[in-house]
Length: 320
Figure 1 (cartoon, one colour):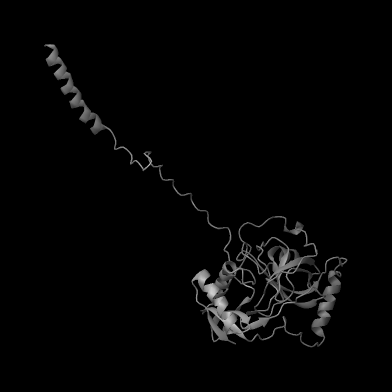
Figure 2 (cartoon, rainbow, N blue to C red):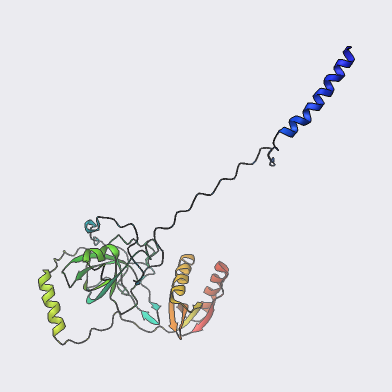
């Protein structure tokens, strides 16, 4: 075979092998605009279920509970230590829940009352309190309708003499004429977790005040029995309320109190610049969110325009 034929034969053989190599190879990856292959898509990490069913604080319900992870040393949790703190700028403004208007105290002052204490737990754990702080069911805190936020009180279980000092940083309770809602840890230390509620005495503790010792349990029990046996005038309804009148903005209306509370919590987070309180006004089976009061319709209208621009929500002016 001469040189020319040999060269031609080699070219034909190479051309025949190239399609085979292409056919055996895999399809090349798509090239992006920069000329490099795109990274492989990462698989999303599996989501862990939340440890608690979350809901905003301020009340106790029958389906609330301790959750699945309870520390084993709740008895060792120290009481809240009273200290001088500035009062919250907004949490002590008048507000309305379930058709009742509440007027919180504007200054620290002596306070003493007896009534029923409940507790709230996992449904509110991790949610914002009325003070904006995050509720921790394992801290020594409490919710009260009218005591200043923040303030400190000593709560004594009248059945067994146990006493704790807690820091008030939330509003509630608003049902069943209850006096105070304690955190899970505080209720544990007072011994009424299983019962859900207990009759207690609540007394303010002012910063710098010398600590008091609770009376012995048998003395408290005797006093409680004597109280029950002796005819006594009914305690005044707690907390004190007054009707709020004037010009308001209506932000929404709901057939469910839970939905109204959730929407109010959302608005409070998104409209943190508001200087007025968002009230829940209950009437005729509806729960309406009212913001105010304002001096007149013009002032209310200016706030309504700011809300509309921020949230694409159109409030309207009402008179109450």
